Image 1 (cartoon, helix red, strand yellow):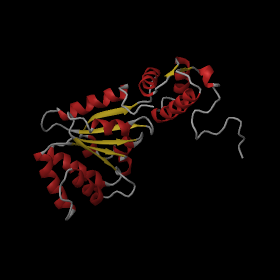
Image 2 (cartoon, one colour; image 1 turned 90 degrees about the vertical axis):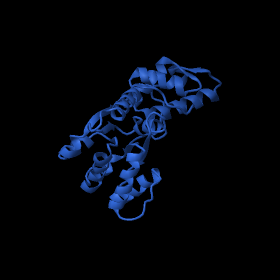
Image 3 (cartoon, one colour; image 1 turned 135 degrees about the vertical axis):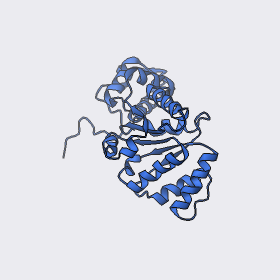
Image 4 (cartoon, helix red, strand yellow; image 1 turned 90 degrees about the horizontal axis):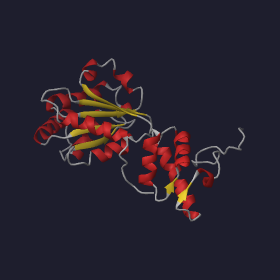
Length: 244
C-alpha cells in the first residue's frame, strides 16, 4: 500500500474553506468547524493541509484531560513561544506572536473542549485579538453542543462536512493507494461493506493487496477474493461464529 493523500471530494471542500478563512477581509469572522464521523479522514487530511506552505498553521489535538493551561502550553510550544507563567501571560505572548507571524490554528478532537467555557472562550479570545483563523474539528453532534454559545457560532464562517466516500472516491482511493489493481466489482464490494468509511476501506484494501501478492495476482476481482462473506476486517466477527 502506498502512503499518500488521495484527492477525494472532502479534500476539495476543506481546502476551499481553508482558503476562504485565510483570505477573508480583515475583521470578518474567521472561525471554522469541520465535522465528520470517525474514520472518514478528517485528522489525516488536516495534518496534510497544515503542512502545505500556502496555509501556514498549527495542528493541535485536544484530550479528555485538556485544560486551558495544557492547551496554551502546547500552542506555545508549537509556535515557539515561552510557555511559562500564568494563562493570561501565555495568551499575551501568543497574541504577540500571532500578530507578528499569522498562522491558522486547527484543533482536532474538539468534542473534548466545547463544554468547557474557559477553554473554548480562550480560543475565541485568541481569534478576536489576533484575527487568527481557528478551526474546530469534531464528530456529528458538536454543532448542537455549540448552539447555546452565540459568541462562538456567530464567528463560524466556514462549516465543512466530511462525508463518507462515494463510489467514485473509493475507486480513486483504490487506484492511488493499492500496488495491485482491485477490480471494479471488488471496489464496489469494499464500498458497500465499509459504507464509505475511509479508515475501514484502507484496512480492507491492505488485506486484499496482501492476498493478491501472496497469490501472484496483478489484478484481483471479487470472485478471486473469494466471497462476499469473506472478512475484510480483522475485527469482524466471523460469519459462521455464533453469539455466546
